Amino acid sequence: MAETPPPNIVIIFTDDQGYQDIGCFGSPDIETPHLDQMAKEGIRFTNFYVSQPVCSASRASLLTGCYADRLGIHGAFMPYVGKGLNPNEETIAEILKPQGYATGIFGKWHLGSEEKFLPTRQGFDEYFGIPYSNDMWPHHPQQGPVFNFKDLPLFENETIVDTLDEQSMTTTWYTEHAVSFIKKNKDQPFFLYVPHSQPHVPLFVSEKFKGKSKRGLYGDVISEIDWSVGEILKTLKEQGLDENTLVIFASDNGPWLNYGTHSGEALPLREGKGTALEGGVRVPCIMRWPGTIPVGKEIKNPAMTIDLLPTIAKISGAKLPNQKIDGIEILDLLKTGRQEKPHHEAYYFYYKTNELHAILSGDGRWKLYLPHGYRSFKDIVGNDDGTPVDYKWNTPMDLELYDLQNDISETQDVLADYPQIVDQLLEQAEKARAELGDKLTKRIGAGVRKIGAL
Image 1: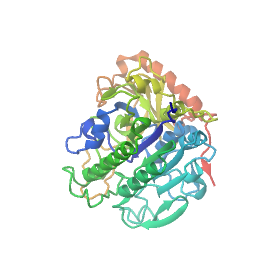
Image 2 (image 1 turned 90 degrees about the vertical axis):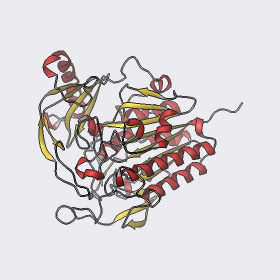
Image 3 (image 1 turned 180 degrees about the vertical axis):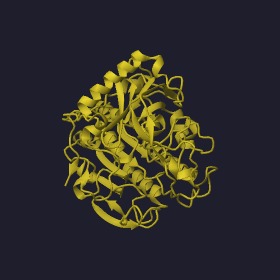
Image 4 (image 1 turned 30 degrees about the horizontal axis):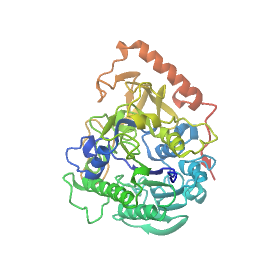
């Protein structure tokens, strides 16, 4: 009897998609039949988190299993600033290569735009896509007064093959490349990473989906991403790879709310992208692996993108990176759909330049916010034309505690009622500060690794 080859891994990562922007996560007006079916055939995580509510930091954590602050990465890299993910860090692609995996990325990178930082220098055999966010181009609504962006390049491996003056075909192109990659590598294990550049503004959709959604252009964009997921799943089935492939779908952070109708929704969560509040860091997540993980299961146990690398290492037989990581594998949780004991003592949410903003208890119930200022969209009405309105900058957050199990929308501060919980989480905060630092308390963690630089 032939030995089963190592499982294929597919990660589909959208950009600024809100928690509610999928049918099975409660969207009232966006239809996502393929994602809904994926959830019926797999697991829907309702408490899945990213480490930071912003592009580059979130992607660094996904690919390395580390808090971005351990890597020295904060915020979103601007184009060609001479910084990126340190080439000495090991990505999911790099730990899988010695196991015989083919590796490909089709979509947005945003971990350094100079040659030495490109995906092909971080374990990927193939790359097709853009090197940073799709709004970093001359057509930005604040080009001139605020920004001076150059042309948006389209890469194939390490060569710029085009500059994009409009982006209506990007989701289709990424999907076509993903499907081709699966077919080409059907006889060997592969890691396919599809980080879509949508629904990050500016929104673009191909003609085949334009005007199809009740939710307007934003809904059209999500519908096309849903189609893309369907094409990938269909191809896996056609190539006989369905039962030996783990497919993971998630978003890199919450919705960019100041873009009005061109933004997603995080309801019933509070706020969105750029905040450590639930709407910024809790994202929709679906995983599917027929015959290995449960069918139609909802998992309420918390997990984070940092847990994906060690989990993938476990199921593939790959070695973990030589340097310390923060993630913990969750294979048993995937296989059983339940877990009695939390696998993390706590989860940490940083933002800006090494500022610890929040701590989540390991069971996902208690969320403690440390004093800081955040950008709020509460009571602000956005525009309908894809141009941004301003936030309420530096909205004050005191030391506040929320019971997410009973108050998912974070409406009632219960700090005074649970002093013991507060003390426990503050103790966890001290551990994070010792390792990762915290600019707000003027402490720098001695173990923080350095950002890559030219």
